[in-house]
Image (cartoon, rainbow, N blue to C red):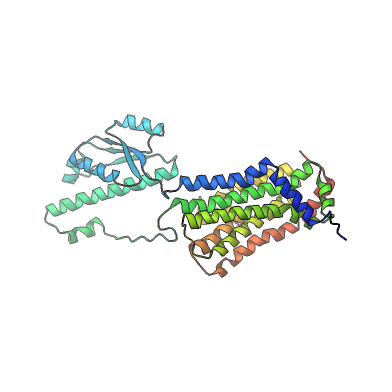
Length: 390
């Protein structure tokens, strides 16, 4: 018969006390996620970078070139902070990261454009900063196309053609664009809905491994088993449940900020999305148990947990499309809880599809917990042996 001083409850209370008295746990489980959420939401509050500084080297200085510069400066993403510099000065400013693009307008730009001699606009973007470089390239290409179309319209009208006759020449193919799920092209929606859950997964990977590995390091493995009544399931449940509860509160806070305060798109019920977070939390803990049971070495398992947690953002297909990856890399992505969380979020939160479309991914997340059961015996042996391998 289980003693009142042994079992699940003593293990659970001991772990709660350990979390509350550990600076590492407080910083890693509470301060870091909340601080990261505040920082990321604040940094991307505008949704899309605006007023990115560039320089314009105007070698023409005509009314046409000045009109062209005013059109470019009217774009919300572009801020022309230097004008009429030499190209050498502009390049040096780009090298010092004071500007992110340089546009060069050739001499006789206005005259050549009016006479149909096709002047060349040359622009350089700093793609070492991928987002700013890409956005500026988009603006520069757009304004160059508009300038070209404007010249064709003016020349055509001077020759007596009407707008209806000129428009098929200026724009032979009409494009109608409808961005789905995130029509505002809001980077905060794109990034924060993935970065914050990825951070939660990373912390749970590391602290799940650490919660058991530190017991072995401090030679408390056998004591922990005795405290649970020599029951490995009580040991694991008592050790992991405090982290589950704490991270559930953090997840609820993250969802409240994203979907109620920031009004990010959520085309399913709040409960369904919270279930996605809960499955991610317990799947991440199951993954951590698999690592400590598989490698049987605290330091090595912790290193692998941190490594996998850090590269998750790339492997799950947010920074690079998963379908464009090599087959082995695509498969590795599906071996991580975050990949299934992401697909549930896309299907439910963004697309609002029926819940059945995500049943496989919910099952996959729960599968990490079930697979971890096969490693409980190895964890129990580690605790019984109580031998720390540096």
